[in-house]
Amino acid sequence: MATNTRDIAATPDQVWDVLSDGWLYPLWVVGATRMRDVDDTWPAAGSALHHSVGAWPLVVDDETRVLECRPGKELRLRAKAWPGGEAEVRIELEAHGERTRVAIHEKSVSGPGSLLPEPLEAPLMKLRNAETLNRLAHVVEGRAARTLTSSHEHP
Image 1 (cartoon, helix red, strand yellow):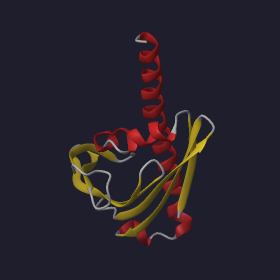
Image 2 (cartoon, rainbow, N blue to C red):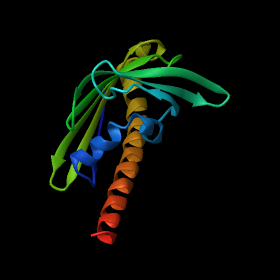
Image 3 (cartoon, rainbow, N blue to C red):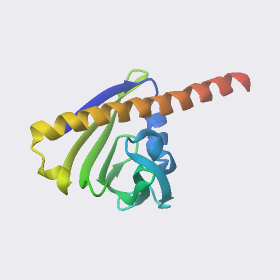
């Protein structure tokens, strides 16, 4: 299993606001290129994001389904990205002062990706998820800064 962590300059609630808005998924998840639909109950267990992966014209429609949701704390997903396969992803949030430590744990569970030995798979996932956390930080911190600025402009 590949694990990445990053501290984000925002509260767990601010990070959760981004994670719980399924329409933002392609902004921070490496590989997701567009959203087609988001279940009304997202991110409740059993709900799904209907997204596409790949680069045009080689775009594949797929989905990511919630296995478990603990609002503000943890999101467990079954992410599909065929023809690559499927992965189980756990995203954990932990408050650290005025920051949030975000951890992503990922493991291929089916398809060609699951055939790779862990010493080959884990470094590839770590590279991808380092960028995923970088993108998530930009989205969360950008929204947090905009919220802070507008609260100072409109007392």
